[in-house]
Figure 1 (cartoon, rainbow, N blue to C red):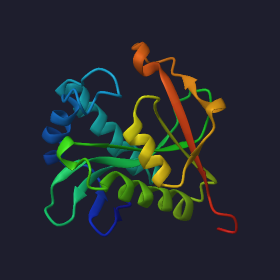
Figure 2: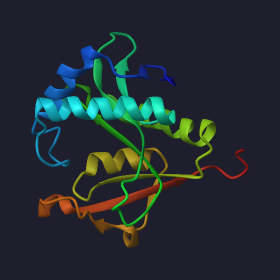
Figure 3: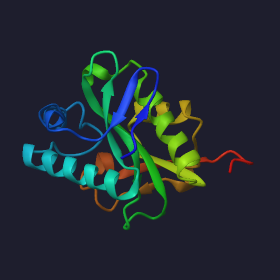
Figure 4: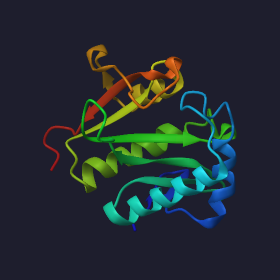
Length: 180
């Protein structure tokens, strides 16, 4: 299975020891603020199984994110196929970090590695990123990654019940011209 490394981070497969901190961060209202309802322990556990299955099946997915110097699990970063009910198709880059990991540049560093993997190893021509219109922190990461947005691409997510979270913004990044 593919693992990715950056100067400070390791993006790897999921371990049993990741489940408790993963469940805790998905029960944190601030972490879930732009994502929707809190997850139960069982929902968090099911998501980990799905993430690991995608990594093994496709060679990409949402990797567990670990700080290299401490071995601490801090969330996930990776690539995922866009859900079928969305008004667009493709692969999106995504991240979710525990609150203590915010503000250290980890999301940008890890997402940049995921983009390189998608473009260089997987040959993807374009990678997307989607977030709630009010999630300014994630949009800042998208801009730091060199992604661009067109307000004409913004959409209402049919799966989101909360009106405050329904409006989504779509960012894009294309593989550099001349890249094999």
